[in-house]
Length: 370
Image (cartoon, rainbow, N blue to C red):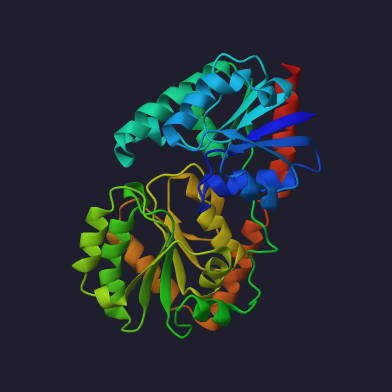
C-alpha cells in the first residue's frame, strides 16, 4: 500500500506529537511503501531518520506551508500517487480525493481554549472540524481523547484508538553511562532532584508545581527542582514565579535536552512530576515509567489512563496534595524505590509502538477500503 505521511509540521526539537510522527516514519516503512512529505529545507533530516522515500515539497515558511497543505497538496504528484494520505497533526488537504487518515491528539482547543494562543485555537478548531467531516478515518491517541472527540465533534468516520508506545531500547531502567551524560550536559550527578519534562505553557501546571515545591524544599534542604523542556507561550508568569521563589537557587531551567540526557534524568530523578491540567496522551509520563521513575501526575485526566496504578495521582491544581505526594516519593528508601520501579516498568510495558503501528495499519486499510 502506498501511504504518504505528512511530516512537515515537525520542528527541529522533537517532542510530543513530533516524537509520535518520527516513530511512525521509522517503523512504518517495513510494512508499507511509505513516502514522507517534508518541508523543502528538511529533506536531509528525514532521510537520516527514516528509510522511507522523502519528498521535500512543502514550503518552509509556516504561513505558506499551511496554505499549501490546504489548497496546493491535492494537486501534487505525491498526493495523487498515494493510496492513503496521513495527516498526523490534526490537518489534511482540502478538496482532495485521496483517502485520508487524520490523527487527533487532544480536544483542549474546544474544552479549554485559555490553555492555548488564540490564533491556534481558531486554526485547530477549524482543522479538527474539517477532518471530522472529510477524513475517511480518524486516529485518536487515547481512549480518553476518543470519547471527548465523539462528544464534541461528531463524525461519521470510524475512530481507531492507537495509544503511543515507548521504545524500551532507549527508555529503560538500566544505567547506561548516566553520570557521563549528566556531566556532558554540565549537570551534577550527586544532587537529589524532582524532575518536570514538557513544554513550558499554561496547561502544564507548572505554577502548581512551583507552589508545592515551597513545602518540598522546606522539608528537604538538598532536593532541587529541575525543569526540562523548551519554552512554549505564556511563560512570563512562570518566569516571575521562579524568580520570586524562596528556593530559587535550587530551581534549574534545563531547556530542551536531547534524548540521552533525558533518559539519564528520568533514571536519576527522586520523583517525576507531571501536574498537567490536560493532555491528549502524556508521553513524558510513559517514558518516565519505562525508566522506573516514581511519578506523580493528574487524576481525572488522560494521564490516569497512561499511568494506571503505577503513579501517585493528585487532583488537578491541588498544591497541597501535589506537595505531599512529592515529599512521599522523594523520601522513598532504595528498597521502596525498587518496588515502585517494578510497578512502573510493568505499566509502561503495556504500551508498545508495535501495537500502535498495528492499529495505524488498520486505520490505513479502513481508509483505503472506504
